[in-house]
Length: 298
Image (cartoon, rainbow, N blue to C red; front, side):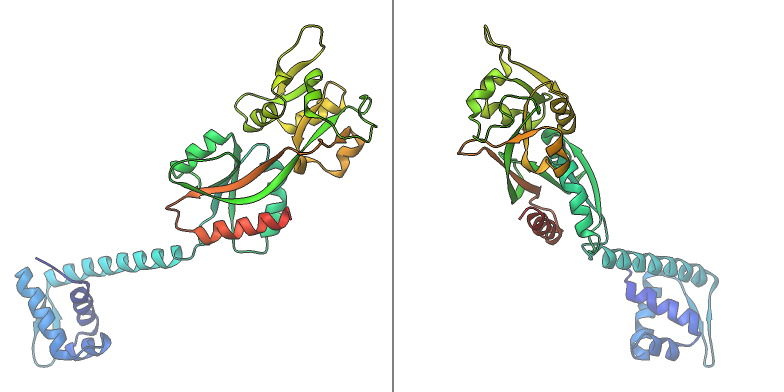
């Protein structure tokens, strides 16, 4: 047995109009077309839905029950159509966006300010690269902002910006007032403040200065790990040690707290990208976000 939505619309129209001609007009079909369709449905169901006579149409008791169920079905179809219509709008649902800990605190405030006038809505979170990429692949979040190298199956990336890395020193450090730029090799003799294990930026710092973490005989160097770049800043300002941090994490207030120095060329940088699933069906939003972030850091 196969019942069509059209047949259900026809029997509901007849039940409401109590007249085949008026029901046909309401459904924008001829009366014979409507009558034949209802006859076919009654035959398939082996039930009389209506009692017909020359002057009026009366719905049977069982017909009334079936019409009520038909109305429920048609209402559900309308809900499905409305749901599909709303979700066809790529802005109808918030975009769940993650960012690594060394990017989120410095990018999100500017990004949210920039998109306030746009239809984009964000739900944001921060975390380690591996945790964020796992959530992205599982569909728990829609896109993540991470640093290269980043290459995961079934994910695509869009380049956002290249960020210079800078050195921060206590105000009383011997290099604080010198005009020359710093060779990363010289950092191996410093007390270096690093991010905790598991943070991708820590690994990048150790690529710049691999020996920063290993004490050497006769040297006073050592490495101290902490949880965030902001904590590192406070520790440098307190004279505990020096560090390498992303250039975009610095602001004007920091200049009075510690010395900010640049590397000799080639200046170390990191490349920031936005990643999403290849199958993600709201790519225009990802491209819009990428353009806004590129503008912020242009």
